[in-house]
Image 1 (cartoon, rainbow over the protein chains, first blue to last red):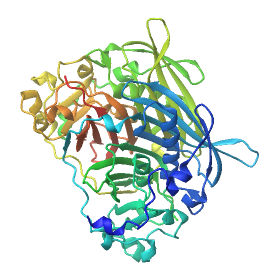
Image 2 (image 1 turned 135 degrees about the vertical axis):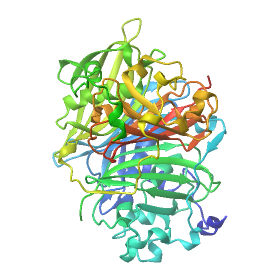
Image 3 (image 1 turned 180 degrees about the vertical axis):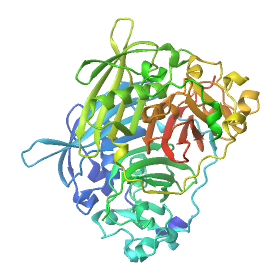
Image 4 (image 1 turned 120 degrees about the vertical axis):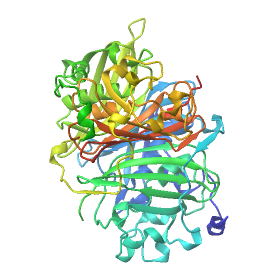
Length: 286
Length: 286
C-alpha cells in the first residue's frame, strides 16, 4: 500500500501515543473528569475542535457502558485555551446495544468561574458486535498516493501560520486542494488529505473524531481568508479503521448567509468508509 | 410555478394551521412546557420524529432570545406515543448573533415516572439578519413537477400501511423513487418528494424540521422492509423558505453494520437550498 512508505519507523501503539497522553482524563468522581489541555493541539492558541471532541468522546467512553462512539453532536460555545479543564458527563439512557450520554467541557475565567466551552450529546455502541454487511454506493476520494501529497514540512505551509497542532499530525494534502496555499484557490469547496498521527499511532474511533476536523477549512479553497469557527459538528463512526493512514475528504456545497457546511468522509486503508461528519461553521472575514 | 396548481384553494396561514395547533405548548414555568401529543402525527402509533423535533424547536424558539433554529441535533431515546408530554429547556449560552439551548421531551410510564423520549442540543439565530450572499455548487434535485408525482391518495399508498401522519401532509413522491411501493425497489438509496402541509400552510423554519424526516425511509428503495428507527438527527436551517411546496431529496450512500445515514436536502420554490439534515438510523428487519 502506498501509505506504508510514510509510516514512521518507530510507531506508537494505540494507548501509548501523544494523542493518548494528551486526551487522558483524571476521574474526580463518577462521571466527572479533570484534564490539562495541552498547547500541543492548538492553532493560533485555540485548542482544535476535533481534539476537544476526542477528549469528550474519551470521557463518555469511560462513563457509558458501551465502548465506541457511534454518533456525537457537539455545539461549540466558547474557544478553549490550553490549561486546566473539567469534563462533566451524564448518562442519559442505557440500552442493550446503544447508550446515550452528554458531556460538557468547562474552563475558568479570571474570577475562577466555570465557563462552558463545548457540549456534546452522543450515542455509544460496540463496533465489534456489528454485522459485517456493507451495501454502499460511496466511493473513496480520488487522490494521489501519500508520497505525492504535501504537508507543512514540504512547504509552503498548507496550515496557515503553521501550528503546534500540525506537528502532532501526519497531514498530507492533495495538491489539487492546495491552490489556496499558493495564492490560487480553486474556487471549489474541497479539501482532501491523508491523515495520521505524527508518532505513527493508528487511527482508532477516538482519533477519527480528530480526523474529521483536522484539515484546513474548505473556505480557503473558496478564496476566503480569516477564521471559520465551528458552530456545530456531528460525527458518525461507522466502522473500526484498519491500520495505516486514512484518507479524509471534506466538501462544502453551500456557502450562504455567512455560514457554510463542511461534510467530511474518512476512508481507511482497506477502502472502508469509517466515519462521516458534517459541521456548520461561520465565515468571519480575516 | 407547477406547484401552484396543487395548493389547496383555502390555505391555512402560518400560525393558524394544523401544524401550529398541534405543536402549541403551554408554558408551565420559564423554560418548562406542557403539550398533549396528537395522534394525528403518528405512524403505526408512534409520533413522527420530525414532528417531535418541531415541538422541541418551538419550545426553544420561545425559551431562547433568538427566533430561528440554525442547527438542531436530536438523539432519540424511546418512542413517543400520543398523549401528555413535558418539555424542559435549558439556555446553555446566549450570544449576540447565536444562542444555544437544550431541550428534552418526557412522557410518563404506567407508574407515572418520567421517561425521556428525545433530547436536543440547538443553536438559534435570526435568519432575517443574515447577509444574502450565496456561493453554492448544490443543485436542486432533478424531479418531475408535482402533478406528475404520487401521494397516498393516488394509491398504491407510498407510505407503507398508510398513517394519520400522511393525512397531515401534501407529500408527492417522485415516481423514480416509488419502485418499493410497487414491489420493485430500485436498489438505490434515494427518496424524493414534493412536501407541504395538507392545509396549505407554508413551510416555515419550524416546518422544515418536519420536512427532513417526513419521507418514507430510503431503506425501502434499498429493498429492506421493517422499521428504521432514528438514532440521531441533525438539521441545519440555512434560509427562510419562499412560499409554496418544497422539494425534499433524501440519499443514503452507506448501509453497513446494520446502520445507515439519511442525508436530506430541502429546496424551496425559489430554488434555494433551505435546509440540510443527516440522520443515523438502525435497520431492523421486519
